[in-house]
Length: 356
View 1 (spheres, rainbow, N blue to C red):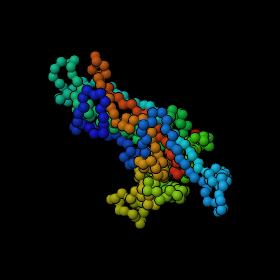
View 2: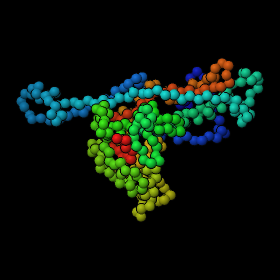
View 3: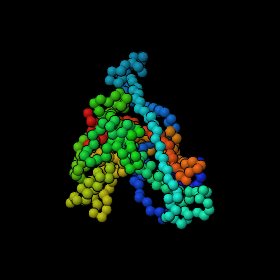
View 4: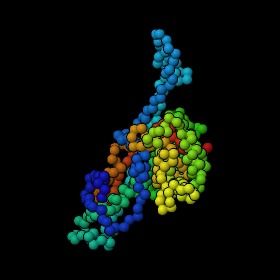
């Protein structure tokens, strides 16, 4: 069992049973690739403040007065700090599963303990394997929800998805993505004609294109358009990356391999870079979508996640359902929210559109 998993008030714990075959969940690539900063200790609401300084260069005078200093005026942003605030408000949800450990008796001899039926317990090896499956499914859910969740579900999101593609606020293999607004919902809300001042705080995301990307040539054109619209002041930032889905990368990789003058032969994957910036294909980001921005694990990241307690997503409670029952339950309780920090420093290409 992964050492990062903590057990709260458990009766048993044990090592993973290696010979139990399982379906592999997709995990959480956003965490693994270091594309998001996680802010813990938020019980209700956290303010993400940003500040920008306006013009400060002025005519030289022998003795400056208050008309030359801070607060002298606001025309053109002269002598003015401009503060903007965006918020993280973690929302509650949980993982809960009940099952009867005696269901495994017919499969495993070791799970057939001796003694009276009333005293039989959940074997540690079975428990560990089932917990691993549970954690994998939870990671899969969070990984996709970071990008595709919408508070209230798809009806409340009011986002039109390309035909046959992931619905923002819909369901994934783990459950409904309806508890908080993910990155795509935040970006589209920020660029909507009906965006509130709170949603527009920090400027607006640069939309480089909104058509579906169906060929490698389309993808290359999208990368070029996004790079040209990328604000010049952030182009040299070390954390600036292109983030896309594997569908986008596969089209681009095949396109490069098919060229007469190739960057690599067909037995190798092409370099994950464009204009020197890393291309990060991940599972979780929706189809026909590419983002360019500073995405890291540090505070400078343009994508933040707010949680209540730092390791809530790794703490599992395992207990007998009640004293007179054979059933056991697994339970996890979490609070999460996602937000972009400096929208004006994000360039997006997405075929997802506001329903308006």
